[in-house]
Image (cartoon, rainbow over all chains, first blue to last red; front, side, top):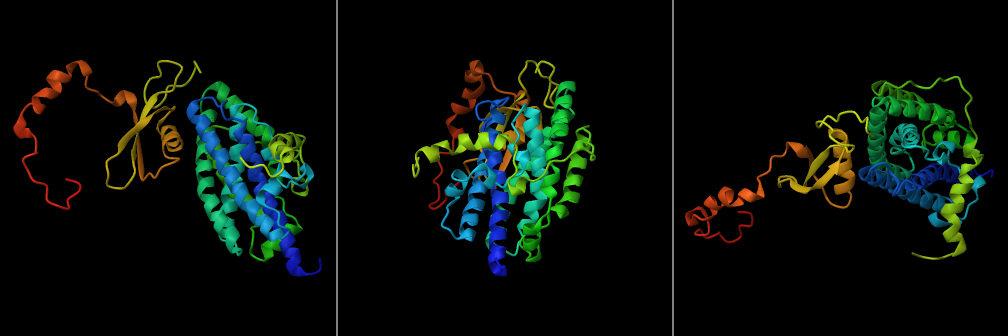
Length: 258
Length: 106
C-alpha cells in the first residue's frame, strides 16, 4: 500500500461503504414500518423515504464496487458482507421504537445528511458529485418531513412532547461519531473528495437548535458518554439481526432474481 | 388520539385528523384537477402527505390542498332545478360555431 493512488482508492472504497451502509441500514429499518405506521398517509411517507434510502445505497455501493475493482456488485456488497465489514453508524441501526423515536433518529440523521451531501455534491470526484446531487434533492425532502414532525410532536400534546424529548435524549449518545474524523477521511479530504466530518458539526448544531426551539424541546446535554467506533466495524447488537433478515434470501438462493 | 389538539384546518370532531382535498396540476398553465383526499393535522402536513400519496408516480408542477369542510357542494337532489335551466336552452350551447382547423384547446 505504498502507492498513494492505491491508498486513495481503498480509502474511497471504505468511505463509500460508510455512505452506502448508512442509507442501506436506515432504509431497511424504515421499511419495517410498512403496514404499521400510525396512519395510512404516514405509512406511505415512511415507505417512500425507505425506498429513497435503499436507492441511494444502491448507487453508492455500486460506485464502491467499481472503485474497489474486484467486480463486486452493489448486491454482493449488501448481501454478502458480515456485520463487522459494515461501516454504518450505530444511530441508523437503532430499533424503530415508538413513532417519536423513529422520527428522532431520522431527524438527527437528516440534519447530518443535509450538510454532508451539500458538500459532497461539489466533490472533486465527478461520479460521487453527481450521485450526491441526486441524493441531496431527496435528503432535503426527508429533512422537511422529519423536522416538521419534530415540531408537531414536540409542540403537540403533553405525551407527544415527553416521548419526543426522551427519544432525543436516548439517541444522543449515538450522534458524536457522525462527526468523527480519521485517516481515511483526511486523506480523501486533502484530495478535495470529501468534507471533514468535524466541519459539518456547526451546521448540524444550528439546524437542531432552530428546530428544537420551535418544537419547545431541549437540546440534550453535551457532556454525556458518547459511543464511537462504528466506522471501524464496531456495531451494536442490532446490526446482526437486521442483516440476518435482510440477507437471508440472497444467501439461501444465491443468484435468485425476483 | 382522543386528546389530539385542534388542527389548524378546523375543529376535530372525531379521532381522525381533518380531511383535505388534493388538487394536482400536471403542466404549468393547466387547471388543477382533483386527485383525491387525505387526512392531515394541518396544511403543511397535508401538502407533504399529498406529495407522497399523489405525486410519487406522476409528473406534477403544482399542488393545492384544501380543507374538505371549506368546500360547498351542490346537492344531488336539486340537480333538476339547479342545472336544467341552462341545459335546455339550445342557444346557450356553442355547437353552431365551426372550430377552425388546427385549434386544439377551444
